[in-house]
Length: 180
Image 1 (cartoon, rainbow, N blue to C red):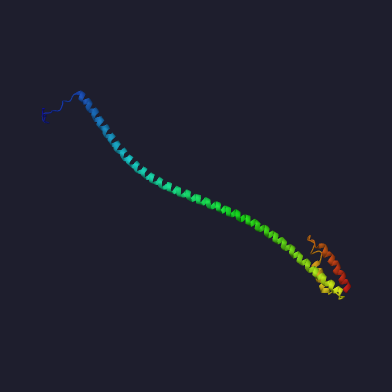
Image 2: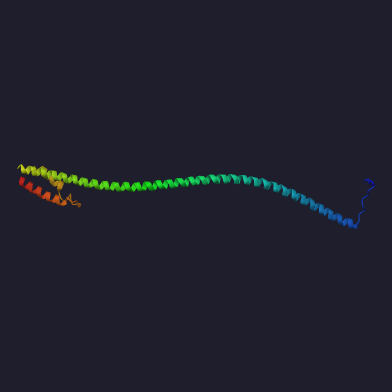
């Protein structure tokens, strides 16, 4: 093997063919350098995109957790709304029943009040009859009070006691005339 020293190696002499390749080599080296810079830039962009992707994945996990929590909260709220609607329906049903009962008791109370007034009139009439049977004249104040209680104008609201009140008024007037 033969050793070649740097001093013994000489540069080839320029030739037109070599000069043609020399320009192409320089162009290729320039293109290669541009491509290396472009690759370095793309690698940096790729690294940034990988970091952004990792960040986006982390955000996505957080959003999924929040979404799951919100869905559970939403289900809880819907359940609460359904319960409140059921309670409201129950309340409304009870309110209707209570209103019906109030109307019924109001009607019964009104009927009982009319019965009490009728019984008061009947009691006064009995007192008058007792007084008449004992031949004692009836007191004019009592007669006026009876007339005021059983006057047909007071009983003209369609009650069943209208006729009775009219008859009692006639009777009381007759007794009052006799007492004079």
